[in-house]
Length: 310
Image 1 (tube, rainbow, N blue to C red):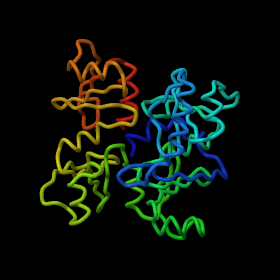
Image 2: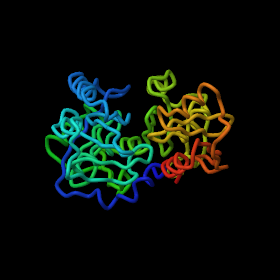
Image 3: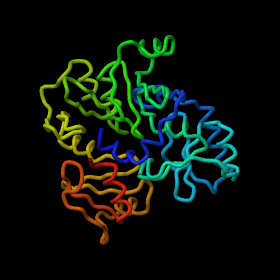
């Protein structure tokens, strides 16, 4: 999905590490399993003990994110590195991926493999990192069990340099591969006959689709999606919301224009309370689907467009 890959292109070369093997299980979501309550409580307790290092708000799966000096630090839940960092001990040795994270933030951690695992993680999927390549499976699938038992299968599909950080992605079938690559938080995609269907997690429309197939009533946007795929969805509004979405940003579509904010920002709170602000920046026809984009400042605008537009 080039709209997402472009933000990682500058760090692609740094993300190939021979011999790295890491597993990510799907976190709590409509398609995955329940979270580890003990690990969650452990993180909350550690953060309470170090209130000067706030959460970055981009946690996923087994990874915790902390905001420090304008950069997002990533750690495995329950790790000694996390405990040490929360105690105020910034590691002397760390790795950094500039502008590779959600919202265009720079990512840092003690190990490159931690950042690789974090970037690869997606709700509703299990990822295995082997020699710098991402293997993607459905949770609980026979393909996953076979892979863990015997290793690389004889039959699979591959997309070189198509994943986050420019990593190569492998999967047991094209549907799994494409749905992984087109994943965005807050949406479910289904790849059928070269076309991409878009739904909200847990929606009645998704349940009907899974049960009966293509609904009689839907909208189509030819060549409008990632890799110029044709998009299908229950409504035009859903297609626009999906295309406008970018990890690390809050987007609101008003009269066909995309308003972009940082999650939890004062500007977002004011917008929700008061509506359109007196001061903002605007880029006509610069966004996904050639929609006009508005943002509270140039930095937010630039980071959003870099992540959301091919």
